[in-house]
Image 1 (cartoon, rainbow, N blue to C red):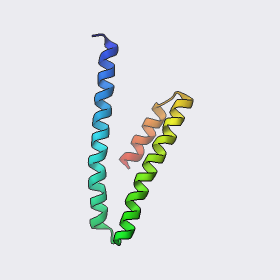
Image 2: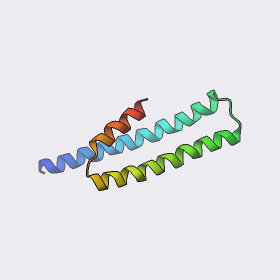
Image 3: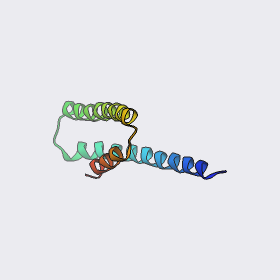
Length: 85
């Protein structure tokens, strides 16, 4: 196998672990919000749905931006900064 193949496997591994970790964090984050914030069931449902719709919308927008500009590093760094906050 060439070095290009190793890079592809590395990209796959990084993407898998990033995707997997995001679902773990999202599960605990929504549970934490349920316990800590004093919201009704309706407000909590609105919050969870808003988070889901926002993430889906931003992922489509980000994909379009990457496709048009053919740049991804500034979006990755910005996304990681937002995620760390």
